[in-house]
Image (tube, rainbow, N blue to C red):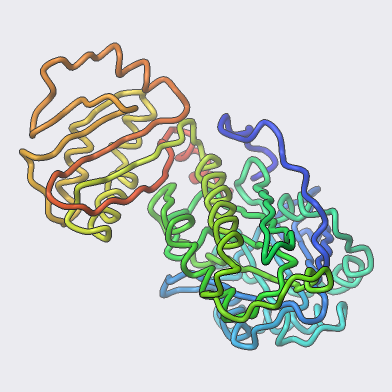
Length: 415
């Protein structure tokens, strides 16, 4: 369980100070859903007028909360978010649907929000019914004590096999007015997002209409959460949501209705940077991870092909175990490039580890220095670069190594 696992060696040494975001309050509590002696329920309350955007798993077996959020997203507004850890409420049939409906009813009574403005997310074990009665009473208590400076507590409450809470915050200017963007994420295993990580929630006080929020979020996720992998497995529960309270309008920030508005340029950069930060934290907390790996592919036939090849490398158990063993086994990278199904020419392929070229033109470089490369492989941050030499397509993805601890964590997950 999350609180028993040793802290990832790649965990941040400090956490940023998370400022209050006007229009958002948080509270956490112990519902005893699966974990005992720790918080496992998060309630976030948003002021009237908060807009919302979201991207969700493309899994053909989505969880009941994902279905609920998709249905409510079209309304474009949000007043409350309820998240639980320990149970994913996925593959739970009619009981899963009944559970989200009851949870929404309890949340509506506790917060005064309409059910259509309540968003739900669950993470944890798949296939076990979630007893929504556990939300009764506690959501009312949380609504009464919710306060702005509790975002770090919120990040802790949604952890499962995570070893540290994932938080980030940035500021940006819209037409000269400073706005804040802060977010939390959870995820350590079952990470090969086909939209976002398992769960991530981002909040801002910027006054941005829901369609503009959605366009920016959908674009930003491609180079962040959709460019990471821990174990190649896409969760049933992947949810990334962005809430905008609009409170900065009272300070003179103009209301923005289009993602193409030039006044959003700084906000877009900050949003992209924040999502990439959170995505990297997920990889750095990959179950059993000891190495943070950047995989870059260049010279591919297209950007799409480059990403397919990069993910082939990043998802290869043989590449990942070699990195765990601090072995610059470029033959395994060759294997991953070759099996990806995209155009590649053996005699044009070059491979580098840590900026040191180890193979070029289809063979090992003449002056290959094993000791020099081994020193690079002992570092926590590892880079792999495959240059295909056949086009201009490039892509970068991030992953972690595959250690014995990953097997132990997942072998014991339901025990």
